[in-house]
Length: 380
Ligand code: MG
Image 1 (cartoon, rainbow, N blue to C red):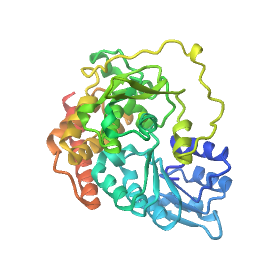
Image 2: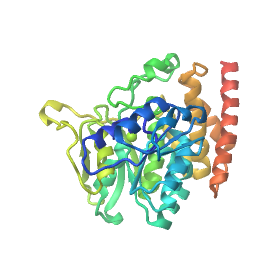
Image 3: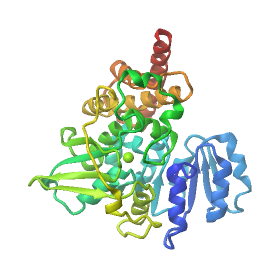
């Protein structure tokens, strides 16, 4: 389990604690080595990886036969050297790509919560899975829904995919009003309980843009056949439109433990807590078009998707830099899509063909995006 101290990782451990047929053989984290150690002791895990090298010493008392990897590629090393039937990748951002490729390269099935892997190197990730026959099982709630709806269906039966978006905390706000948004306001998501990076992405609608790209790669569906609809209740997790006009929907309470459990137990299904939805008490469900004028990130992401993996890798790196700058108080909320659009405009390139090229592109883009942040801040 990679990223075990984050939101996905902690909820996955809850699922595992309640399941008799899952055993954790390795855990990884970024820098929260104290929590990682607690988790490793509780679940009897001998192998751990800590990306923040200085923090790894915390885990030295772990297990007499255990191994502690450290450094930026620690999670990928863990995946390469420890045998597992399934890898859950809950790492945030570009940092998750190497471990995704390591798991698929070994032929190990991958429960993927790290959507950035597909955004940064979708073609490479798909090729790695195809080469070894490893399965990619999405953990993202919308994609888990789509995956379930599409099981056993012929591609020729599917007209299009409909991904739902909560709209985030600023749904209905005008573009001008978004200038004053603070990190605290943006971190308060109305329906889903998630980590800070994805919560900000949800507030800008970039998360939905990344998810359109993710769906394109996961299901091999062209961009023009992937719709986004805003659905503030987050009860319908996504839908598929069939060629005969029927629309199939996947419903449930917004609880990440459900798609996590599905991916961990696939193809079986087991109970997850007490989360049966009472339809009559759920009340009204409604749907509306996304406001792409106030939230331009969605169309920026779609345009990058059409350009290919080079542009989407740039998109992702610029977005990570912009979100970080916003959370650090260096950039206005409305500056996030501006930084991303401008960086994609300046830096978009042909798709990288090796992992080293992707890393290089990500690195260069971050420097370019920092420049755009500095320019915007000077001018504003
Ligand atoms: Mg999602």
